[in-house]
Amino acid sequence: DETLAFYKQSVPFELVKRYRIPASELFHSDMMAGQHSEVEIALIKTATVYLKLIDFNPDAKEKPYAKPVHGPGYTHICFQSSADDPALTKFQNAGLSMVSRNAPVDLGGYGVTYAYGRDPDGTMIENETIDKPRRDNAAWITHIGGATSDVDRMVTFYTKLIGYGARRRGEYANFKRIDDVAGIDGLVLRSSWFALRNLEIEFWEYVKPATPVRDEPANVDQLGYSMTAFEVTDADAEATRLKTEGIEIIGSVKISQGWKIYYAYDPDGNVISIQQNVSAPKSQSIDDMLWIDPTTF
Image (cartoon, rainbow, N blue to C red; front, side):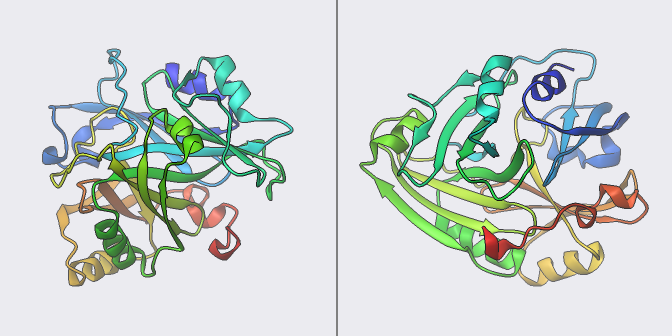
């Protein structure tokens, strides 16, 4: 309730459905640190992606958890909005706890400013404010970001997973304005960006301070961003392809709410969901949303 209320004050979204199911319908037991009989789920539709909010203790309030900016693991999602009506102001009015200093931060005078902040769960969101947006939505999600101890390893993995390489790589040091965005002085960073059909995935290797090495599986019941779901047209075929690429599938297939789901881990232990719509409403598929040509990013 609290998370939905916070985001509803700040950005447009549609609550598609809210429901409770046995945790075992959606997850394998070894993907969770705790024992959970039931989870509550809110499926959210935004302009570019679906978000699935999962409460592993529906009848109790958890303490906030602030994952370090330098990770490891998924650290944030990014909302873009127009400078004429910035979502950042609305998030701040809703109680966003700022991470960035002197926000919003203008990195280079190219019409985009940046700001990190935390929601009531302690989960970080990024706001990019655009002078000349190419969308007419009030706000939209443009990427999910993660921190890794080895960005080269992640690029190799996601090139196999997605089928093509990173669209851009970058290295940064001695850049005070980037330090202000992350709220950390003296950053040394290496990065990569993958353009997908409707959003981007970005990975940041914090060389200084170093992102801790994590090559063991993350738990999906850890507060914060726990997994990324990729929709495919044939989940069985995709699971077979991934196995030939040396990507291990976790357990057996799951069927939940009309979706066929396989799970895997990336090299940092982040959870990946490969899922096919087999009987859910077509409106819950990415194909029913506005397609973004990755070459236009």
